[in-house]
Length: 400
Image (cartoon, rainbow, N blue to C red; front, side):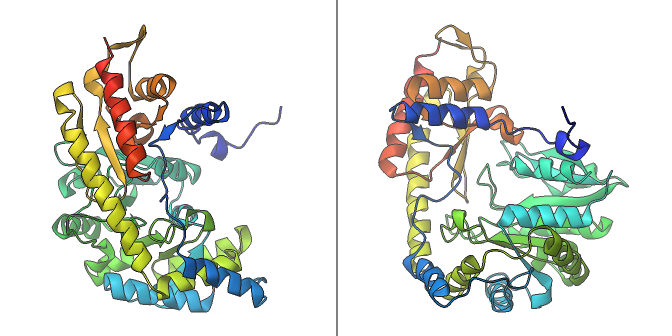
């Protein structure tokens, strides 16, 4: 047997695969599964965006373009960053990639050397540490408490800094918690990063999905010095229901962008041309459908919170989310309880039993560095969400 490279061998297999595979098996067998594990909007891509892709095909826009992105699209991203975030970038500082995940990999690959430490607030999106490890970096976890609404503080980050610290990964709004950092909190974190000259990878993919009147604030907007230290990651997957189109982008210092452009030209070359024209329509067109989607997510969030408040007497609790479309349901009070003879020892056991006996799919929190919880997405219909939450309550009532 040929041995795989140490780089790939260091990457942990996704702990969600077993749950996903089991859910798919149940569906294939004709079972009805209510899926709280989805990480994508359950809305169609707006019609004008789909039409732009069709028009691009009809016009013959099917050939190679610049590896770092269409010039027109890079200009549109610059305008978006200026209009929405107060950030002034040149097109040469923008890289269009195959989804925000690709942008994240590019950013880490271009800046992190073997042995460099990367601070990752936990709970975290499960891909962050694997990308860091695949690039030879060392993940350093800083744990946010439930009492702090799953947000780390500047003091915690300061304490984690060493001579080897190269980067901080900041995700607001957050997957998996829905946490949204305030401008004040971000400015405090930025002060630490400027003091120690730490790069910040700022994942802002859920930027548009914020509720309760809160507003997104990019750490790159703190100061010119912080902008130079920040790699802004964004895309159209979540905001415009374009997950399958695969387009993300980043904005950063000129020298980093130049390095990433060179690397991408040798790795993937350009994002498919039709998607780039569709994204031009997304960024420059009518956003009324996006606003309807955000309003729908907000209504589902409110309803989920209302229902979960009623479950607190059962011993269930949650951390209130203010962005994205996730809730972390705290279930550790039930560790040690039995489900049909099986002792529940952690979130993976809870998720597996929920799927087996109630046909409800949820993501175990251990995947995100938070074993005390399971993640519930509200990117599903109101009716399915309500029915699924009722089944979750039944499940915990039946434990002994």
